[in-house]
Image 1: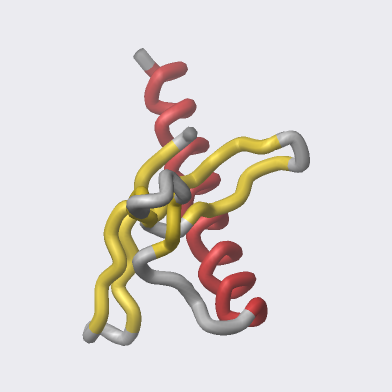
Image 2: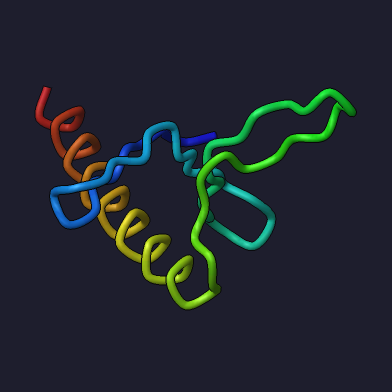
Length: 78
């Protein structure tokens, strides 16, 4: 896990605890989830379709890369 983020949609709805994860194929997001009584994890908030999921993931990962680059530059300046 690289980061935990929150998003606000249209200044009306917020989703907390979205995880930025580095997998074998690169970075991706995991929506907030809860462990069910059967031991499986289930998303508690998630996009209904793949297009929306892709848009949310693109925005989050772009902002993550910007923040990571800024943090790296800050470390180099010290």
